[in-house]
Image (tube, rainbow, N blue to C red; front, side, top):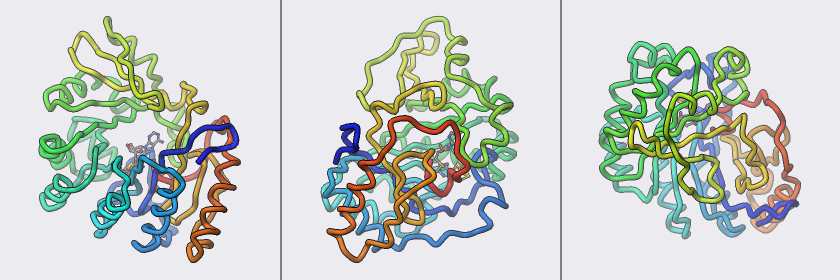
Length: 308
Ligand code: SAM
Ligand code: SF4
């Protein structure tokens, strides 16, 4: 499927729930989640994934909210695999018990992105609302034996600006890639954006020697080999960078609304068309044709609903 600017749309990010067990300060607050959304059923999710597969989606990422709060997530992953989607990934806060870790290890998931913004137990509790650092570290250690694991770290001036080196050493010790992501002015983060934002450029100044590694042409991350650590580190300049020209993705929110961009206000409610696959396909294609070429500067949409 192509949009109006002939960009090939092959990547679907699917927020399968807006429930979460964390309250990360830049993503979700108690008042922001007061209005509970109606979540899509497993069957509705199957229908949406099937249609996107027919429209040429090759890469799928389940996100949320916390996707592993859905008991049926493994059925959803296996369904996507069974219809021929081979590049299936998930983003999680990593606060998982042994049973889930074992299931992930045996699943068809290609990779798991685990969010980890600090290695300081006290800061972790303040940032997420959960005393969970030990459990998340243990998830990273266990899962990296079976699956490709990447750590996602959102840069926050008061939290981790002084921890960059420690976080890279941790990633190296555990043989996983770490990616630093610029804080985006989305939803709750708008309140702290000015004081907490750190650019990738500022982080790169910390290192003396590094060189860029060639990455996949659609990748939003730039990867560098940092000589001081002899490790490959990813950087996503989600704010200071411009990658709309090669954007290949669309998003479905936890309520089943299709968005062409994280920053868009207008979406297409897929639930209205779920009973007729032909109409659903037509509506999606029509909507994706209208995908903008540049994004808005900020949005009040909630990250935990639209999916990060
Ligand atoms: N709950 C899962 C997790 O935390 O990994 C998946 C959903 S979360 C919304 C997905 C990713 O978005 C996380 O890595 C999170 O740190 C990131 N995120 C949330 N709000 C953000 C913001 N304002 N700017 C940049 N990244 C953000
Ligand atoms: Fe939950 Fe993930 Fe948002 Fe944190 S970043 S509140 S874990 S959805």
